[in-house]
Image 1 (spheres, rainbow, N blue to C red):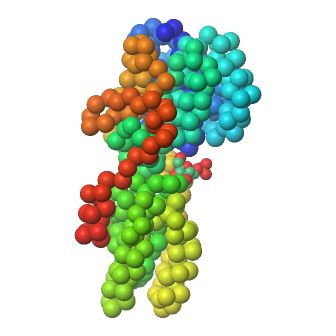
Image 2 (cartoon, rainbow, N blue to C red; image 1 turned 60 degrees about the vertical axis):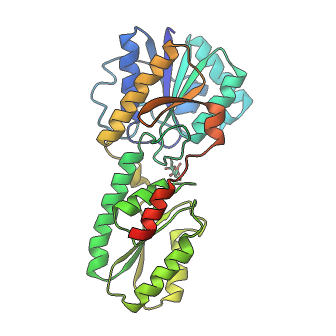
Image 3 (tube, rainbow, N blue to C red; image 1 turned 90 degrees about the horizontal axis):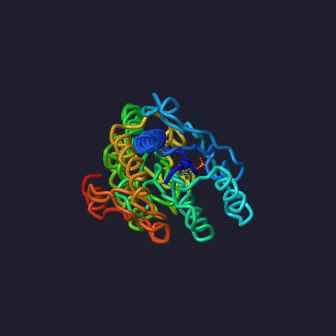
Amino acid sequence: MKRVAVLTSGGDSPGMNAAIRAVVKTAYFYQIEVFGVLRGYEGLIQGTFEPLNLERVHNIIHRGGTILKSARSERFKTEEGRKQAYEHLLKHNIDAVIAVGGDGTYTGAKVFCEEFPEIAWIGLPGTIDNDLYGTDFTIGYDTAINTAMEAIDRIRDTADALNRLFIVEVMGRDAGFIALRSGIASGAEAVLIPESKADLPRLLRRLEQRAKNPEHAFIVVVAEGDEIGSSLALKQKLQYKYPRWDIRVVVLGHLQRGGAPTCADRVLASELGFAAVEALRKGIKNVAIGKVHKEIHYTPFEQAIKHHNDINPNLLRLLEILA
Ligand code: F6P
């Protein structure tokens, strides 16, 4: 293992920089050269590689976003795009790629490994959604839930002052992890997530109770991927049923993806970046690396993309009782 490339791909997440830093520093320790690929899989196709040294990763552990930039690449989904990527990797004498990203990143990695097995590949879980199989937590999730929780706390202050009902939409394309944890932590009166079918009837029951005494703030946290539809559609439904209530919608959106990573995300990213280089040195390849029950865990890409991280049923029960 002489030369490794590192890239960040898909939606960025706080802690990606900490992971890049850990890869570069660990590689330096073992005298392995590192190249950074700019803009994820797009950069592999275009050949935008830059040598990464200790100086380049100095002073980045606390920064959100990614110094390598990111992209959602359509071209990497094509055989031609992947062939171009392979040629650039060969030209730069790269033995292995460490890709930090989510589901789409792992899918691209799996296909590439099957087509070009001579290049080793490691995936690191970088997404705020926490929906990846093979790790308890993804890099960026802790920061995102803390950002969402703080935002909901602020919304609650004003909701309480004016007895308003707020629908707060949080990120999570197909997953309710952000909604569930930030909802529990902020004492939301209801949480709607794609993984739970019982949410809407439960919300309607709660609203019946509120109708008897509307003198309270009421916060509904909704995952953007919830099947009930967008938060605006939900507002319309509720407003129709309760025309006299003051109902407002806040979409937290991309502010959940930015900002300085929390301590937990920095440490997780550092551990996984280190583990990626260690794994390559041991000859482990074509796996996603995560942490399960405090231990480093390797999951073949095939498995990682087939499965989905599960919502903890205990948290759903907790929410049912505490909300
Ligand atoms: O990266 C995950 C995520 O933040 C999802 O929660 C969200 O649905 C999606 O990315 C948004 O992606 P984009 O910024 O490309 O619209």
